Length: 638
Image (cartoon, rainbow, N blue to C red; front, side, top):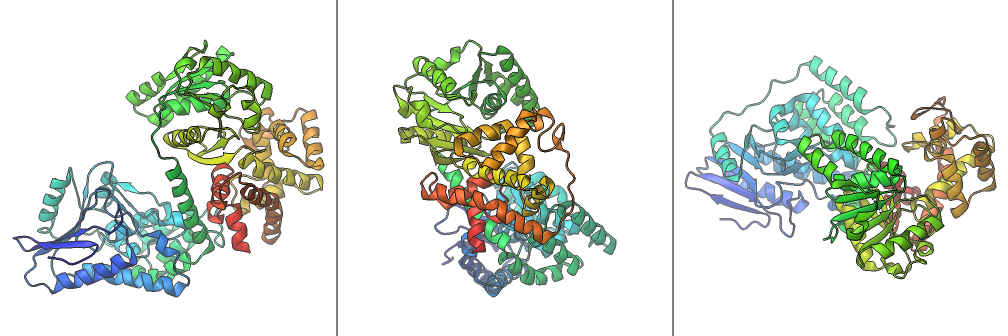
Protein backbone atom coordinates (compact mmCIF):
# COMPACT_ATOMS: atom_id res chain seq x y z
CA UNK A 1 0.00 0.00 0.00
CA UNK A 2 2.97 2.36 0.27
CA UNK A 3 5.40 4.21 -1.96
CA UNK A 4 7.69 5.27 0.87
CA UNK A 5 11.46 4.97 0.63
CA UNK A 6 12.33 4.12 4.23
CA UNK A 7 9.06 2.70 5.54
CA UNK A 8 6.40 0.22 4.54
CA UNK A 9 2.73 0.68 5.41
CA UNK A 10 0.06 -1.98 5.37
CA UNK A 11 -3.45 -2.28 6.84
CA UNK A 12 -4.63 -5.63 8.17
CA UNK A 13 -8.15 -7.09 8.24
CA UNK A 14 -8.78 -5.51 11.66
CA UNK A 15 -7.93 -2.03 10.33
CA UNK A 16 -4.64 -1.93 12.23
CA UNK A 17 -1.95 0.04 10.41
CA UNK A 18 1.46 -1.67 10.41
CA UNK A 19 4.40 0.68 9.81
CA UNK A 20 7.82 -0.93 9.44
CA UNK A 21 11.04 1.08 9.38
CA UNK A 22 13.66 -0.06 6.86
CA UNK A 23 16.23 2.63 6.07
CA UNK A 24 17.47 2.45 2.50
CA UNK A 25 21.16 1.69 1.88
CA UNK A 26 21.92 0.91 5.53
CA UNK A 27 22.23 -2.33 7.49
CA UNK A 28 20.68 -0.62 10.53
CA UNK A 29 17.98 1.98 11.06
CA UNK A 30 19.24 5.53 11.63
CA UNK A 31 17.34 8.78 12.19
CA UNK A 32 18.40 10.80 9.15
CA UNK A 33 16.94 14.08 7.96
CA UNK A 34 15.25 12.41 4.97
CA UNK A 35 13.87 9.69 7.26
CA UNK A 36 12.34 12.20 9.64
CA UNK A 37 10.83 14.16 6.76
CA UNK A 38 9.27 11.01 5.38
CA UNK A 39 8.10 9.88 8.82
CA UNK A 40 6.23 13.15 9.31
CA UNK A 41 4.51 12.78 5.95
CA UNK A 42 3.68 9.14 6.64
CA UNK A 43 2.02 10.02 9.95
CA UNK A 44 -0.07 12.68 8.22
CA UNK A 45 -1.13 10.11 5.62
CA UNK A 46 -2.10 7.56 8.26
CA UNK A 47 -3.99 10.16 10.29
CA UNK A 48 -6.06 11.04 7.21
CA UNK A 49 -7.10 7.44 6.55
CA UNK A 50 -10.69 6.60 7.57
CA UNK A 51 -11.59 3.79 9.97
CA UNK A 52 -8.10 2.99 11.28
CA UNK A 53 -8.36 1.23 14.66
CA UNK A 54 -4.73 1.46 15.73
CA UNK A 55 -1.10 1.44 14.61
CA UNK A 56 1.85 -0.85 15.35
CA UNK A 57 5.34 0.44 14.56
CA UNK A 58 8.36 -1.87 14.22
CA UNK A 59 11.63 -2.45 12.38
CA UNK A 60 12.30 -4.66 9.36
CA UNK A 61 16.04 -4.80 10.01
CA UNK A 62 17.78 -7.94 11.24
CA UNK A 63 19.97 -5.88 13.56
CA UNK A 64 18.24 -3.89 16.26
CA UNK A 65 15.38 -1.41 16.26
CA UNK A 66 16.87 2.06 15.67
CA UNK A 67 20.52 2.82 16.46
CA UNK A 68 19.98 6.57 16.82
CA UNK A 69 20.72 9.61 14.71
CA UNK A 70 23.18 9.45 11.84
CA UNK A 71 26.00 11.51 13.35
CA UNK A 72 27.65 11.92 9.95
CA UNK A 73 24.87 14.38 9.15
CA UNK A 74 25.76 16.42 12.22
CA UNK A 75 29.01 17.48 10.56
CA UNK A 76 27.01 19.22 7.83
CA UNK A 77 25.47 21.59 10.39
CA UNK A 78 27.42 24.85 10.53
CA UNK A 79 25.39 27.07 12.87
CA UNK A 80 23.02 26.81 15.81
CA UNK A 81 20.24 27.82 13.43
CA UNK A 82 21.05 24.85 11.18
CA UNK A 83 20.79 22.56 14.18
CA UNK A 84 17.54 24.14 15.34
CA UNK A 85 15.99 23.51 11.91
CA UNK A 86 16.90 19.81 12.17
CA UNK A 87 15.57 19.59 15.73
CA UNK A 88 12.26 21.19 14.74
CA UNK A 89 11.91 18.73 11.86
CA UNK A 90 12.32 15.81 14.28
CA UNK A 91 10.00 17.36 16.86
CA UNK A 92 7.27 17.85 14.27
CA UNK A 93 7.57 14.29 12.93
CA UNK A 94 7.41 12.73 16.39
CA UNK A 95 4.59 15.03 17.54
CA UNK A 96 2.58 13.73 14.57
CA UNK A 97 2.78 10.24 16.14
CA UNK A 98 1.66 11.52 19.52
CA UNK A 99 -1.46 13.22 18.11
CA UNK A 100 -2.78 10.29 16.07
CA UNK A 101 -6.50 9.77 16.78
CA UNK A 102 -6.20 6.06 17.58
CA UNK A 103 -4.11 3.90 19.93
CA UNK A 104 -0.50 3.23 18.96
CA UNK A 105 2.20 0.77 19.99
CA UNK A 106 5.93 0.61 19.26
CA UNK A 107 7.76 -2.73 19.21
CA UNK A 108 11.46 -2.59 20.16
CA UNK A 109 13.38 -5.70 19.11
CA UNK A 110 16.96 -4.78 19.97
CA UNK A 111 19.04 -1.60 20.09
CA UNK A 112 17.01 1.57 20.74
CA UNK A 113 19.50 4.31 21.57
CA UNK A 114 19.29 8.09 21.37
CA UNK A 115 16.98 8.93 18.49
CA UNK A 116 15.98 5.26 18.48
CA UNK A 117 14.42 5.69 21.91
CA UNK A 118 13.02 9.10 21.02
CA UNK A 119 11.09 7.68 18.06
CA UNK A 120 9.45 5.15 20.44
CA UNK A 121 8.50 7.58 23.22
CA UNK A 122 5.55 9.31 21.46
CA UNK A 123 3.69 5.99 21.19
CA UNK A 124 0.95 5.17 23.68
CA UNK A 125 2.55 1.81 24.44
CA UNK A 126 6.08 0.40 24.09
CA UNK A 127 6.75 -3.35 24.15
CA UNK A 128 10.34 -4.65 24.04
CA UNK A 129 11.94 -7.97 23.22
CA UNK A 130 13.27 -9.61 26.37
CA UNK A 131 16.90 -10.68 26.24
CA UNK A 132 20.48 -9.39 25.95
CA UNK A 133 20.07 -7.85 22.49
CA UNK A 134 17.70 -5.20 23.80
CA UNK A 135 19.51 -2.05 24.94
CA UNK A 136 17.54 1.16 25.53
CA UNK A 137 18.97 4.54 26.51
CA UNK A 138 20.36 7.97 25.80
CA UNK A 139 24.12 7.77 25.00
CA UNK A 140 24.28 11.36 23.65
CA UNK A 141 26.44 12.56 26.57
CA UNK A 142 29.28 10.49 25.05
CA UNK A 143 29.16 12.90 22.10
CA UNK A 144 28.92 15.99 24.31
CA UNK A 145 25.18 16.21 23.62
CA UNK A 146 21.78 15.56 25.19
CA UNK A 147 18.61 14.09 23.69
CA UNK A 148 17.34 16.64 21.19
CA UNK A 149 14.30 15.04 19.54
CA UNK A 150 11.90 15.73 22.45
CA UNK A 151 13.34 12.85 24.47
CA UNK A 152 13.98 14.73 27.72
CA UNK A 153 10.32 15.70 28.09
CA UNK A 154 8.73 12.45 27.02
CA UNK A 155 11.02 10.25 29.08
CA UNK A 156 10.14 12.23 32.22
CA UNK A 157 6.49 11.26 31.71
CA UNK A 158 7.49 7.61 31.84
CA UNK A 159 10.32 7.41 34.39
CA UNK A 160 10.37 10.72 36.29
CA UNK A 161 13.03 13.42 36.58
CA UNK A 162 15.54 11.46 38.69
CA UNK A 163 15.75 8.51 36.29
CA UNK A 164 15.62 10.80 33.25
CA UNK A 165 18.61 12.79 34.55
CA UNK A 166 20.52 9.61 35.27
CA UNK A 167 19.86 8.31 31.75
CA UNK A 168 20.95 11.59 30.14
CA UNK A 169 24.04 12.11 32.31
CA UNK A 170 25.36 8.54 32.52
CA UNK A 171 24.73 7.59 28.90
CA UNK A 172 24.22 3.99 30.06
CA UNK A 173 21.81 1.76 28.16
CA UNK A 174 19.23 -0.22 30.12
CA UNK A 175 18.68 -3.91 29.41
CA UNK A 176 15.11 -5.06 28.87
CA UNK A 177 14.32 -6.01 32.47
CA UNK A 178 15.62 -2.71 33.87
CA UNK A 179 13.72 -0.73 31.22
CA UNK A 180 10.53 -2.48 32.30
CA UNK A 181 11.20 -1.90 36.00
CA UNK A 182 11.82 1.80 35.35
CA UNK A 183 8.58 2.18 33.38
CA UNK A 184 10.45 3.01 30.21
CA UNK A 185 8.63 0.19 28.42
CA UNK A 186 5.20 -1.26 29.22
CA UNK A 187 5.91 -4.94 28.66
CA UNK A 188 8.35 -7.58 27.45
CA UNK A 189 7.97 -10.44 24.99
CA UNK A 190 10.05 -13.61 24.71
CA UNK A 191 10.36 -13.65 20.89
CA UNK A 192 9.29 -11.72 17.81
CA UNK A 193 6.00 -13.59 17.39
CA UNK A 194 5.13 -12.89 21.01
CA UNK A 195 6.23 -9.28 20.50
CA UNK A 196 3.62 -8.73 17.79
CA UNK A 197 0.92 -10.45 19.84
CA UNK A 198 1.79 -8.21 22.79
CA UNK A 199 1.50 -5.21 20.48
CA UNK A 200 -2.05 -6.19 19.47
CA UNK A 201 -2.98 -6.68 23.12
CA UNK A 202 -1.46 -3.32 24.14
CA UNK A 203 -3.71 -1.44 21.67
CA UNK A 204 -6.70 -2.53 23.76
CA UNK A 205 -5.19 -1.34 27.05
CA UNK A 206 -5.44 2.13 28.63
CA UNK A 207 -2.36 4.34 28.52
CA UNK A 208 -0.31 3.98 31.69
CA UNK A 209 1.95 6.77 32.99
CA UNK A 210 3.48 7.43 36.40
CA UNK A 211 2.32 10.21 38.70
CA UNK A 212 4.08 13.53 37.99
CA UNK A 213 6.99 14.36 40.29
CA UNK A 214 6.41 16.73 43.16
CA UNK A 215 8.47 19.93 43.43
CA UNK A 216 10.51 18.28 46.19
CA UNK A 217 11.12 15.20 44.01
CA UNK A 218 12.49 17.42 41.26
CA UNK A 219 14.65 19.47 43.65
CA UNK A 220 16.13 16.30 45.17
CA UNK A 221 16.76 14.75 41.73
CA UNK A 222 18.64 17.84 40.53
CA UNK A 223 20.71 18.05 43.73
CA UNK A 224 21.63 14.36 43.38
CA UNK A 225 22.63 14.86 39.73
CA UNK A 226 24.82 17.85 40.58
CA UNK A 227 26.57 15.94 43.36
CA UNK A 228 27.18 12.83 41.25
CA UNK A 229 27.85 14.07 37.72
CA UNK A 230 29.57 17.48 37.89
CA UNK A 231 32.55 16.69 40.11
CA UNK A 232 35.84 16.97 38.25
CA UNK A 233 34.32 18.66 35.19
CA UNK A 234 34.79 22.24 34.04
CA UNK A 235 31.80 23.81 32.32
CA UNK A 236 33.84 25.71 29.74
CA UNK A 237 35.58 22.50 28.66
CA UNK A 238 32.76 19.95 28.89
CA UNK A 239 29.46 21.82 28.98
CA UNK A 240 27.02 18.94 28.41
CA UNK A 241 26.49 17.72 32.01
CA UNK A 242 26.09 21.30 33.26
CA UNK A 243 23.66 22.33 30.53
CA UNK A 244 21.61 19.15 30.91
CA UNK A 245 21.08 19.85 34.61
CA UNK A 246 20.39 23.52 33.88
CA UNK A 247 17.87 22.38 31.26
CA UNK A 248 15.91 20.34 33.81
CA UNK A 249 16.13 23.20 36.32
CA UNK A 250 14.86 25.80 33.88
CA UNK A 251 11.87 23.65 32.91
CA UNK A 252 11.21 22.67 36.55
CA UNK A 253 10.93 19.11 35.25
CA UNK A 254 7.76 19.93 33.28
CA UNK A 255 7.65 17.67 30.17
CA UNK A 256 6.21 20.20 27.72
CA UNK A 257 8.69 22.86 28.79
CA UNK A 258 11.58 20.40 28.51
CA UNK A 259 10.52 19.63 24.93
CA UNK A 260 10.37 23.33 24.04
CA UNK A 261 13.71 24.14 25.68
CA UNK A 262 15.51 21.34 23.83
CA UNK A 263 15.31 23.49 20.71
CA UNK A 264 17.53 26.06 22.45
CA UNK A 265 19.92 23.88 24.46
CA UNK A 266 20.65 21.09 21.96
CA UNK A 267 21.97 23.47 19.25
CA UNK A 268 24.33 25.10 21.78
CA UNK A 269 25.78 21.74 22.69
CA UNK A 270 26.06 20.66 19.06
CA UNK A 271 28.17 23.73 18.27
CA UNK A 272 30.45 23.30 21.31
CA UNK A 273 34.13 22.44 20.92
CA UNK A 274 33.70 19.40 23.16
CA UNK A 275 30.97 17.90 20.98
CA UNK A 276 33.01 18.55 17.84
CA UNK A 277 35.93 16.60 19.30
CA UNK A 278 33.85 13.81 20.83
CA UNK A 279 32.03 13.15 17.56
CA UNK A 280 35.39 12.91 15.78
CA UNK A 281 36.70 10.56 18.49
CA UNK A 282 33.60 8.40 18.04
CA UNK A 283 34.41 8.04 14.34
CA UNK A 284 38.07 7.31 15.09
CA UNK A 285 37.14 4.57 17.55
CA UNK A 286 34.78 3.06 15.01
CA UNK A 287 37.53 3.10 12.37
CA UNK A 288 39.94 1.31 14.73
CA UNK A 289 37.35 -1.36 15.51
CA UNK A 290 36.89 -2.01 11.80
CA UNK A 291 40.63 -2.56 11.27
CA UNK A 292 40.52 -5.13 14.08
CA UNK A 293 37.79 -7.29 12.52
CA UNK A 294 38.80 -10.35 10.57
CA UNK A 295 39.21 -14.10 10.67
CA UNK A 296 42.22 -15.33 12.59
CA UNK A 297 44.01 -18.65 12.51
CA UNK A 298 44.94 -18.34 16.17
CA UNK A 299 43.57 -20.47 18.98
CA UNK A 300 46.66 -21.21 21.09
CA UNK A 301 48.79 -18.47 22.66
CA UNK A 302 52.16 -18.92 24.33
CA UNK A 303 53.59 -16.13 26.52
CA UNK A 304 57.26 -16.04 27.52
CA UNK A 305 57.90 -14.00 30.65
CA UNK A 306 55.64 -14.23 33.73
CA UNK A 307 56.39 -10.85 35.21
CA UNK A 308 53.67 -8.25 35.70
CA UNK A 309 53.25 -7.51 32.00
CA UNK A 310 53.65 -11.06 30.69
CA UNK A 311 51.37 -12.47 33.37
CA UNK A 312 48.72 -9.85 32.61
CA UNK A 313 48.90 -10.53 28.87
CA UNK A 314 48.53 -14.27 29.47
CA UNK A 315 45.57 -13.97 31.83
CA UNK A 316 43.83 -11.51 29.50
CA UNK A 317 44.25 -13.90 26.55
CA UNK A 318 42.81 -16.76 28.61
CA UNK A 319 39.94 -14.58 29.82
CA UNK A 320 39.04 -13.77 26.19
CA UNK A 321 38.80 -17.43 25.21
CA UNK A 322 42.31 -18.40 24.04
CA UNK A 323 44.17 -21.43 25.35
CA UNK A 324 47.20 -19.71 26.81
CA UNK A 325 50.40 -21.21 28.14
CA UNK A 326 52.79 -19.17 30.31
CA UNK A 327 56.47 -19.89 30.79
CA UNK A 328 59.39 -18.30 32.63
CA UNK A 329 62.76 -19.43 33.95
CA UNK A 330 61.46 -18.27 37.34
CA UNK A 331 58.85 -20.90 38.14
CA UNK A 332 57.63 -18.98 41.18
CA UNK A 333 56.72 -16.06 38.88
CA UNK A 334 54.46 -18.41 36.88
CA UNK A 335 52.70 -19.53 40.06
CA UNK A 336 52.22 -15.94 41.21
CA UNK A 337 50.79 -14.94 37.82
CA UNK A 338 48.31 -17.83 37.93
CA UNK A 339 47.23 -16.80 41.43
CA UNK A 340 46.68 -13.22 40.24
CA UNK A 341 44.75 -14.59 37.26
CA UNK A 342 42.32 -16.52 39.44
CA UNK A 343 41.60 -13.36 41.46
CA UNK A 344 41.02 -11.41 38.23
CA UNK A 345 38.69 -14.05 36.79
CA UNK A 346 36.61 -14.14 39.98
CA UNK A 347 36.38 -10.34 40.00
CA UNK A 348 35.53 -9.93 36.32
CA UNK A 349 33.68 -13.08 35.24
CA UNK A 350 31.41 -13.69 38.29
CA UNK A 351 29.81 -17.00 37.18
CA UNK A 352 31.63 -20.08 38.49
CA UNK A 353 31.44 -22.12 35.28
CA UNK A 354 32.92 -19.24 33.27
CA UNK A 355 35.62 -18.68 35.90
CA UNK A 356 36.49 -22.38 35.82
CA UNK A 357 36.75 -22.41 32.03
CA UNK A 358 39.05 -19.36 31.98
CA UNK A 359 41.22 -20.84 34.72
CA UNK A 360 41.58 -24.08 32.77
CA UNK A 361 42.59 -22.17 29.63
CA UNK A 362 45.59 -20.62 31.44
CA UNK A 363 48.30 -23.28 31.53
CA UNK A 364 51.41 -23.02 33.68
CA UNK A 365 54.23 -24.23 31.44
CA UNK A 366 57.55 -24.11 33.33
CA UNK A 367 59.18 -26.54 30.89
CA UNK A 368 58.18 -24.45 27.84
CA UNK A 369 56.52 -27.46 26.21
CA UNK A 370 53.53 -25.67 24.67
CA UNK A 371 55.70 -23.46 22.47
CA UNK A 372 55.69 -26.22 19.82
CA UNK A 373 51.93 -26.03 19.24
CA UNK A 374 51.28 -22.31 19.74
CA UNK A 375 49.82 -20.22 16.90
CA UNK A 376 51.27 -17.00 18.32
CA UNK A 377 54.17 -16.61 20.73
CA UNK A 378 54.42 -13.37 22.69
CA UNK A 379 57.71 -12.50 24.34
CA UNK A 380 57.38 -10.23 27.40
CA UNK A 381 60.87 -10.37 28.89
CA UNK A 382 63.00 -7.48 30.18
CA UNK A 383 63.90 -4.64 27.80
CA UNK A 384 67.38 -5.96 27.00
CA UNK A 385 68.10 -6.54 23.34
CA UNK A 386 70.54 -9.42 23.81
CA UNK A 387 68.06 -11.23 26.06
CA UNK A 388 65.29 -10.80 23.50
CA UNK A 389 67.51 -12.01 20.65
CA UNK A 390 68.45 -15.09 22.64
CA UNK A 391 64.79 -15.83 23.37
CA UNK A 392 63.73 -15.45 19.73
CA UNK A 393 66.54 -17.65 18.40
CA UNK A 394 65.26 -20.35 20.77
CA UNK A 395 61.65 -19.67 19.75
CA UNK A 396 62.47 -20.01 16.06
CA UNK A 397 63.98 -23.43 16.63
CA UNK A 398 61.02 -24.75 18.63
CA UNK A 399 57.95 -23.02 17.17
CA UNK A 400 55.75 -24.13 14.29
CA UNK A 401 56.98 -22.68 10.98
CA UNK A 402 53.75 -20.69 10.58
CA UNK A 403 53.54 -19.43 14.17
CA UNK A 404 53.47 -15.64 14.58
CA UNK A 405 56.34 -14.28 16.66
CA UNK A 406 55.58 -11.13 18.68
CA UNK A 407 57.60 -9.01 21.06
CA UNK A 408 56.05 -6.78 23.69
CA UNK A 409 58.96 -4.36 23.51
CA UNK A 410 58.21 -0.76 24.39
CA UNK A 411 61.33 0.80 22.91
CA UNK A 412 63.58 -1.62 20.97
CA UNK A 413 63.31 -1.57 17.17
CA UNK A 414 61.79 -4.68 15.62
CA UNK A 415 64.60 -4.82 13.06
CA UNK A 416 67.23 -4.99 15.82
CA UNK A 417 65.54 -8.03 17.35
CA UNK A 418 64.67 -9.68 14.02
CA UNK A 419 68.29 -9.58 12.84
CA UNK A 420 68.92 -12.83 14.74
CA UNK A 421 66.16 -14.73 12.88
CA UNK A 422 66.40 -16.73 9.68
CA UNK A 423 62.80 -15.65 8.87
CA UNK A 424 62.54 -12.06 10.19
CA UNK A 425 59.25 -11.60 8.33
CA UNK A 426 57.50 -13.60 11.10
CA UNK A 427 58.37 -11.06 13.81
CA UNK A 428 56.12 -8.15 14.72
CA UNK A 429 55.63 -6.04 17.82
CA UNK A 430 52.60 -6.27 20.10
CA UNK A 431 53.06 -3.45 22.57
CA UNK A 432 50.50 -3.79 25.36
CA UNK A 433 50.15 -1.02 27.92
CA UNK A 434 50.24 -1.44 31.68
CA UNK A 435 48.00 -2.81 33.10
CA UNK A 436 47.38 -5.03 30.10
CA UNK A 437 44.10 -6.31 31.55
CA UNK A 438 42.72 -2.75 31.57
CA UNK A 439 44.41 -0.51 29.01
CA UNK A 440 42.63 -0.71 25.62
CA UNK A 441 45.49 0.20 23.26
CA UNK A 442 47.85 -2.23 21.56
CA UNK A 443 50.51 -0.89 19.21
CA UNK A 444 50.95 -3.43 16.40
CA UNK A 445 54.48 -2.68 15.25
CA UNK A 446 55.72 -3.33 11.75
CA UNK A 447 59.40 -3.93 11.21
CA UNK A 448 60.96 -3.32 7.79
CA UNK A 449 60.67 -7.02 6.93
CA UNK A 450 57.43 -7.86 8.77
CA UNK A 451 54.98 -9.79 6.58
CA UNK A 452 51.81 -7.70 5.94
CA UNK A 453 49.65 -10.81 6.36
CA UNK A 454 51.22 -11.43 9.78
CA UNK A 455 50.50 -7.81 10.73
CA UNK A 456 46.86 -8.21 9.67
CA UNK A 457 46.56 -11.36 11.79
CA UNK A 458 48.05 -9.45 14.73
CA UNK A 459 45.46 -6.67 14.25
CA UNK A 460 42.62 -9.20 14.20
CA UNK A 461 44.08 -11.01 17.21
CA UNK A 462 44.15 -7.74 19.17
CA UNK A 463 40.53 -7.18 18.16
CA UNK A 464 39.61 -10.66 19.39
CA UNK A 465 41.19 -9.67 22.72
CA UNK A 466 38.77 -6.72 22.75
CA UNK A 467 41.68 -4.33 22.42
CA UNK A 468 42.02 -1.30 20.14
CA UNK A 469 45.02 -1.86 17.84
CA UNK A 470 46.91 0.89 16.01
CA UNK A 471 49.39 -0.13 13.31
CA UNK A 472 52.75 1.59 13.93
CA UNK A 473 56.03 1.54 12.01
CA UNK A 474 59.09 0.43 13.95
CA UNK A 475 60.71 3.66 15.10
CA UNK A 476 62.24 4.94 18.33
CA UNK A 477 59.48 5.06 20.93
CA UNK A 478 56.93 3.93 18.33
CA UNK A 479 53.97 6.34 18.77
CA UNK A 480 52.91 6.57 22.41
CA UNK A 481 56.30 6.57 24.12
CA UNK A 482 57.68 8.86 21.45
CA UNK A 483 54.97 11.40 22.29
CA UNK A 484 54.63 10.73 26.04
CA UNK A 485 58.23 10.81 27.25
CA UNK A 486 59.17 14.23 25.82
CA UNK A 487 56.03 15.60 27.52
CA UNK A 488 57.16 14.08 30.83
CA UNK A 489 60.74 15.27 30.33
CA UNK A 490 59.51 18.81 29.64
CA UNK A 491 57.61 18.72 32.92
CA UNK A 492 60.76 17.54 34.73
CA UNK A 493 62.68 20.36 33.03
CA UNK A 494 60.18 22.78 34.58
CA UNK A 495 60.94 21.36 38.03
CA UNK A 496 64.65 21.84 37.36
CA UNK A 497 63.87 25.47 36.49
CA UNK A 498 62.17 25.94 39.86
CA UNK A 499 58.51 25.31 39.13
CA UNK A 500 56.50 23.40 41.73
CA UNK A 501 55.67 19.81 40.74
CA UNK A 502 52.18 20.09 42.22
CA UNK A 503 51.39 23.12 40.03
CA UNK A 504 52.56 21.25 36.93
CA UNK A 505 50.31 18.30 37.70
CA UNK A 506 47.34 20.50 38.56
CA UNK A 507 47.70 22.28 35.19
CA UNK A 508 47.34 18.99 33.33
CA UNK A 509 44.51 17.75 35.56
CA UNK A 510 42.64 20.97 34.78
CA UNK A 511 43.30 20.32 31.09
CA UNK A 512 41.62 16.94 31.49
CA UNK A 513 44.48 14.47 31.78
CA UNK A 514 43.77 11.60 34.21
CA UNK A 515 47.12 12.26 35.94
CA UNK A 516 49.77 14.96 35.84
CA UNK A 517 53.14 14.23 34.15
CA UNK A 518 55.21 14.23 37.36
CA UNK A 519 52.90 11.83 39.16
CA UNK A 520 52.81 9.76 35.97
CA UNK A 521 56.61 9.58 35.89
CA UNK A 522 56.55 8.24 39.44
CA UNK A 523 53.83 5.79 38.43
CA UNK A 524 55.77 4.48 35.41
CA UNK A 525 59.00 4.31 37.39
CA UNK A 526 61.78 6.90 37.23
CA UNK A 527 64.25 4.17 36.24
CA UNK A 528 62.02 3.20 33.29
CA UNK A 529 61.69 6.85 32.24
CA UNK A 530 65.47 7.22 32.39
CA UNK A 531 66.12 4.04 30.39
CA UNK A 532 63.59 4.90 27.67
CA UNK A 533 65.05 8.41 27.54
CA UNK A 534 68.42 6.90 26.63
CA UNK A 535 66.75 5.28 23.61
CA UNK A 536 64.50 8.07 22.33
CA UNK A 537 66.40 11.09 23.64
CA UNK A 538 66.23 13.16 26.81
CA UNK A 539 67.12 16.72 27.81
CA UNK A 540 70.19 17.27 29.98
CA UNK A 541 68.07 18.81 32.74
CA UNK A 542 65.65 15.91 32.88
CA UNK A 543 68.48 13.38 32.71
CA UNK A 544 70.24 15.07 35.64
CA UNK A 545 67.03 15.30 37.69
CA UNK A 546 66.23 11.63 37.12
CA UNK A 547 69.82 10.57 37.85
CA UNK A 548 69.65 12.40 41.17
CA UNK A 549 66.49 10.57 42.16
CA UNK A 550 67.89 7.19 41.09
CA UNK A 551 71.08 7.79 43.08
CA UNK A 552 68.91 8.13 46.18
CA UNK A 553 67.06 4.90 45.34
CA UNK A 554 63.88 6.82 44.58
CA UNK A 555 62.26 5.00 41.68
CA UNK A 556 58.73 6.32 42.18
CA UNK A 557 55.65 4.51 43.42
CA UNK A 558 57.30 1.08 43.54
CA UNK A 559 59.82 2.27 46.17
CA UNK A 560 57.42 4.58 48.00
CA UNK A 561 59.33 7.70 46.96
CA UNK A 562 59.99 9.51 43.71
CA UNK A 563 59.31 13.14 42.99
CA UNK A 564 56.50 12.58 45.51
CA UNK A 565 56.26 10.33 48.55
CA UNK A 566 53.68 7.56 48.02
CA UNK A 567 51.19 5.87 50.32
CA UNK A 568 50.72 2.57 48.51
CA UNK A 569 48.97 3.63 45.26
CA UNK A 570 48.47 7.29 46.16
CA UNK A 571 50.93 10.12 45.58
CA UNK A 572 51.14 12.44 48.57
CA UNK A 573 51.10 15.95 47.14
CA UNK A 574 49.45 19.23 48.19
CA UNK A 575 46.87 19.45 45.40
CA UNK A 576 46.79 23.21 45.92
CA UNK A 577 44.52 25.66 44.13
CA UNK A 578 46.13 27.86 41.49
CA UNK A 579 44.95 30.68 39.24
CA UNK A 580 43.12 29.08 36.27
CA UNK A 581 44.53 31.29 33.51
CA UNK A 582 48.10 30.54 34.60
CA UNK A 583 47.40 26.79 34.62
CA UNK A 584 45.96 26.99 31.10
CA UNK A 585 49.09 28.72 29.80
CA UNK A 586 51.32 26.18 31.52
CA UNK A 587 49.32 23.28 30.05
CA UNK A 588 49.86 24.61 26.53
CA UNK A 589 53.61 24.83 27.13
CA UNK A 590 53.78 21.30 28.51
CA UNK A 591 51.83 19.89 25.56
CA UNK A 592 54.06 21.43 22.86
CA UNK A 593 56.55 18.51 22.65
CA UNK A 594 53.72 15.95 22.65
CA UNK A 595 52.06 17.73 19.72
CA UNK A 596 55.38 18.14 17.89
CA UNK A 597 56.19 14.44 18.18
CA UNK A 598 52.71 13.41 16.99
CA UNK A 599 53.05 15.64 13.93
CA UNK A 600 56.47 14.17 13.21
CA UNK A 601 55.14 10.63 13.59
CA UNK A 602 52.49 11.35 10.96
CA UNK A 603 54.97 13.08 8.63
CA UNK A 604 57.41 10.17 8.87
CA UNK A 605 54.73 7.54 8.30
CA UNK A 606 55.12 6.02 11.75
CA UNK A 607 51.33 6.15 11.87
CA UNK A 608 49.11 6.44 8.84
CA UNK A 609 47.18 9.58 9.79
CA UNK A 610 46.47 12.31 12.31
CA UNK A 611 43.47 10.26 13.38
CA UNK A 612 45.73 7.33 14.30
CA UNK A 613 48.05 9.63 16.25
CA UNK A 614 45.15 11.16 18.14
CA UNK A 615 43.29 7.97 18.99
CA UNK A 616 46.60 6.35 19.98
CA UNK A 617 47.25 9.14 22.49
CA UNK A 618 43.68 9.05 23.77
CA UNK A 619 43.80 5.28 24.34
CA UNK A 620 47.45 4.98 25.38
CA UNK A 621 48.15 8.20 27.28
CA UNK A 622 44.70 9.18 28.48
CA UNK A 623 44.57 12.39 26.47
CA UNK A 624 41.05 13.70 27.20
CA UNK A 625 38.60 12.69 24.43
CA UNK A 626 36.70 15.98 24.72
CA UNK A 627 39.96 17.69 23.67
CA UNK A 628 40.11 15.56 20.52
CA UNK A 629 43.65 14.20 20.80
CA UNK A 630 46.87 16.28 20.59
CA UNK A 631 46.56 17.13 16.90
CA UNK A 632 42.79 17.54 16.92
CA UNK A 633 43.09 19.97 19.83
CA UNK A 634 46.02 21.87 18.32
CA UNK A 635 44.30 22.13 14.93
CA UNK A 636 41.11 23.44 16.55
CA UNK A 637 43.08 26.16 18.37
CA UNK A 638 44.58 27.25 15.03
